[in-house]
Image (cartoon, rainbow, N blue to C red; front, top):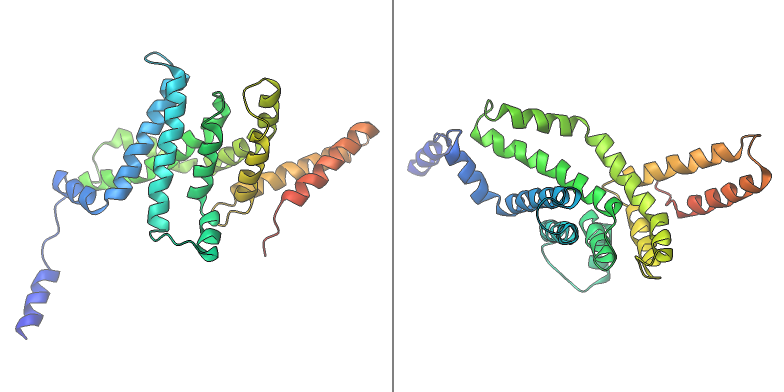
Amino acid sequence: MADTATSGTESTSTPIEKGWPALKQQIIQDKIKVAQWAIRLVTILFTFAYLLPIFGSPYDAYYKVLLSCTATNILRLHQRLPRISFTREFLTTLFLEDSFHYLFYTSIFQYTSPVTLVIVPVFLFALLHSASYSLTLLDCLGQNSWWGARLLISIVEFQSRNILKLCALCEILVMPLTVLLIFTGRAGLLTPIVYYQFLQLRLASRRNPFTRNVFIEITNTFSTIAMKPSVPEILRRIIGSLVELMRRLTPVHQ
């Protein structure tokens, strides 16, 4: 009975009041998520430093964006797959993780010349995820705190689907861009081949269907264009061949 009374007293103990103590407790309890949030803010800052090179080198800022993205996804993988094992099952699970996809992505472009389109999805993902966790931290301070920041966060979250679609579109457009980079001497011959593997991973993603859906939309658009009577026969055949290739790339999900 004494134990029951004690446990009842502990369960009805007064929670920590909103404010800095609650924020401190949240940071202590959620160290990895807080670290991810902080690194994503760094990613955003370095993106602006690359686009608006007022201080420092834009090239350094570009590669720091990729490095900070790498750090974020390593932490995310640690959350999702805390135990590493050299088995086929583990590797299969690893390849399905979106965090692994973007580790692969950043490794591809660490050794190519800076291209703005490459860091657009990195920036957008950092913006979207940092906004979500920023709201959690602001709630620790109180519902009415920092209303200006809450307004900006609500705008980002309201546009979350459009942001994810834009990320997906960038991932797809980078594929032909890697081919063009070869002819300009800004990427190696293997870059499109390796990026093709990344794009296949994104199309097969279970957690994020946006790349696959946008890819299907683009395929259907090209197919519609090819069927128009005003399109020359030669161009129709080229577009038709491209559509067939894109349909073979699209994984079939039950």
